[in-house]
Image 1 (tube, rainbow, N blue to C red):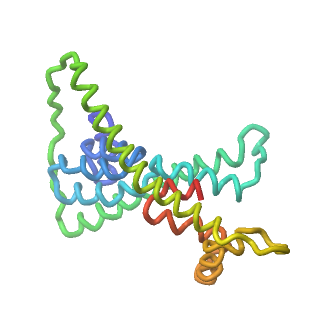
Image 2 (cartoon, rainbow, N blue to C red):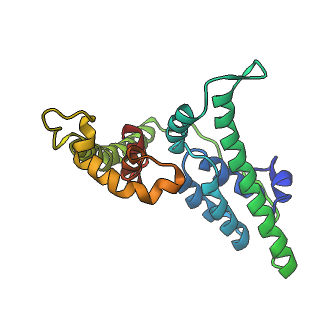
Length: 221
């Protein structure tokens, strides 16, 4: 935070915003929560607003599937892989868009004279050896929360999705794939015209619907 204070100040932020923004690459939720430590209300609001622009780990599997389906597997300049460059560019675009949004907000705040300067003071805590029991308890709480989410929402949606793509079965003598006659196939053909301007097929529409509740289910779909 201290080393990047000067760099982030060019976009209207301070070094305090570095940790929340860094956390955004893992998940935007703890990033937004950690922004509460920022004193300046304007800087805190800007940090919360731009944190979701950065690519979090939950988007990575979705990006990987889309890139593998859309971007050809070929070399660029004989060294770089085009799919890898596309994935890297998504991270870069997210960082640049977040910086641009923060800079534009800073320019508007300068016009209104709403910029407040809070000096960055580094207060180092007293470092101690971690308590093994506390580490195990914290680890168990985190694992339990994840398993509860994975075992309820994600698992339930996966089972529902399996049922929709399996039943009812294809009639005898059917030439089309069995999924065309399933409940999911019927639903996909109904909503496909809505997403047709985006180039989505009815199969893609089926995969996107359960992603509203949990993005991880899109990979299974």
